[in-house]
Length: 304
Image 1 (tube, rainbow, N blue to C red):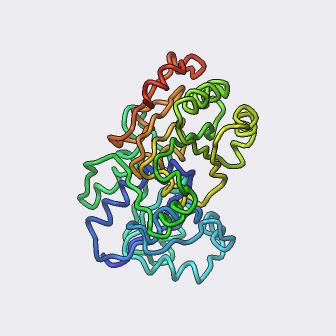
Image 2: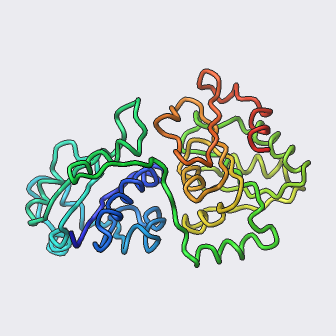
């Protein structure tokens, strides 16, 4: 096996949960060149950081015909796909059109994985790795690991300055409002942490803008550092050695995967399936799956 391609779309958490499966491939075929076709901003977590030698954008317009039956396929893409001995695809392809078009390119072995976990009683990482049993590979550790590059760590050192790695990182958002702890609870948690002299790093992006605005008003006179829409490899390095508090989100998966002592707040989603499996993670499940019922004192005790 000399050339391997993993095709992985989806959100940040989907990608990080797939890393244990990709590690299986790297460990089984250490001499192979492995590439990832995906969202480049997310796949950057793996590019030249142990997992992948290179990445390529799945959002390329010239790739679109591969999702249509009978379309004229790009010769460049056809040559690219044909260069791999093994392709593992996690794309949503219910009619098998993408797979059929790839086979027209003369590809090697093709393995299909689930775009989303479907077994509600089984951890997502296990479900994503299960198709690799066709290669005689089985997953032993469900915990994803991210390996920041030295350039990422240099960014983190410069960004944090004298705060060093002794920060408490807070990510008050997620991909869904129903997975969010009420913002007034975050405000209360922050006030407690400030009273204890903690250095706070707040993480967010466009999807978190309103929640961060509310926190900014509540904490306007407090020593808060904001990590806003950072490149994901840089963000990962910021989390190394920190304490992290977040929800069921892709950012939480990144924090757990770099070893941050993570306190994760779960509401309607099942942590047995979706939570990071790393030993450095503490999951707090809200009563009846309602994060409005999760008391601040429980979170404070877990962070202490």
